[in-house]
Length: 239
Ligand SMILES: [Zn+2]
Picture 1: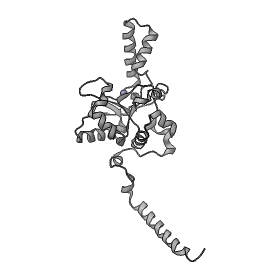
Picture 2: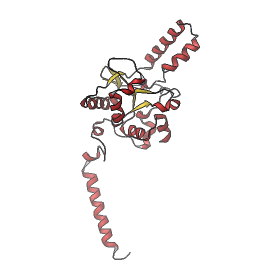
Picture 3: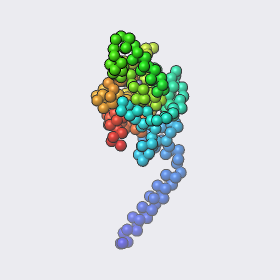
Picture 4: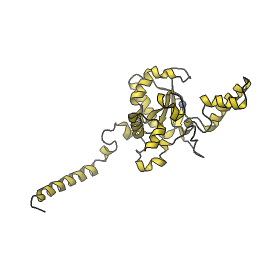
């Protein structure tokens, strides 16, 4: 090692000491991380590391081929007039408040639905169709097209929210044309929500386009999913 190396090493040492000082004396700065908006610091849940993805409740997949985990329990909290998993209530309330600040009213039309409730809704629809003359099998087929089979609705996780238009309880594709949808498209990911059934992903999600249905996955995942233009199924395969 030549003499010229010593000033360089001295400089590196000073840099290391400075780095250690910065990283150990400013915990308040590190809660949000570089480039993160302040709401992240308000979240009650820490951001996950990639090593914990498998156990991450935010990424639980429930769809037509992945049924609700056995014995899954949801601890709910009320947001508006609906119930959600209490772990997402903070971010959901923050999102609704942020939209309201910009003059946009987000109204939750439906959120948590227990598996039992889903079973009831499904059965009632089957019975109605049978009264109209359909066979049991056909009635079940037709019902499955518009109502998730019990155990296959992510509403039963308490992590899904349907936003309603005005006072209507109908969820229709024209939600896409509302100021609420425009706001959600720009900001939902910041609060951890994704449009769960995008227009061009029906073959993968198993659901036609639902511009009103949002799923909580946490801000880190929501941003990645939105930036890459993926649906949840694709994202889970990629991580
Ligand atoms: Zn929904």
